[in-house]
Each structure stands twice: as C-alpha cells, then as structure tokens.
Amino acid sequence: MRTRISVSRLGHDAEVDEFIGFLQATRLLKNLLSSKTDMLVQSYNDVFDKLLQELHDRVTGDTLVVVRRRWKDLAPKIDDLCESFSKYML
Image (cartoon, rainbow, N blue to C red; front, side, top):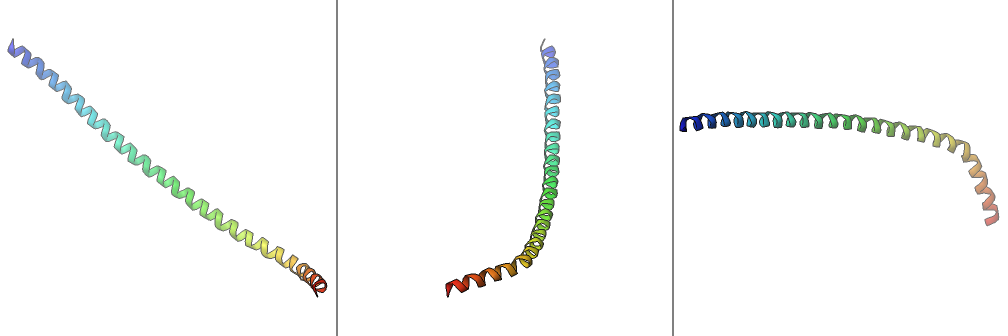
C-alpha cells in the first residue's frame, strides 16, 4: 500500500509541476504582452505629440501672418486715431 501512495503522490507532483509550468508560461506571456502594449502605447503617444507640435507650429505661423496682414491694414487707421486724440489732448 505504501507503494501505491507513493505512485499516487508522484502523479500528483507531476500535475502540480505541470500546473506550475503553465502558470510560469502564462506569466511570461502576460509580461511579454504587457511590455509590447507599453511600447505600442508609447509609439502612439510619440506620434500624437509630433502631430500636436506640427499643428502648434503651423497655427502659430498662420496666426503671425494674419496678425501682420491685419496690422498693415489697421496701422494707418490707428495713426489717424492717435492724431485725432492728440489734438484734443493738447
């Protein structure tokens, strides 16, 4: 009977070893997927940051062009207005 318990126990240890191997493989796969996901998310963030910077640079340049054009249009009118006020101030 002792032999039978030993055989039964050996079978149990093999199942436990198989289960532990499965857990280790699962954890390894989870870690690989996690690091792959982190790398993918980081690459998406890098692309979005680059696009945002390009948008910011383009909008800033466009804004400067618009301000310059408006200033050229308004500068004579502002000068006239300042002259008008200066007449009243003196």
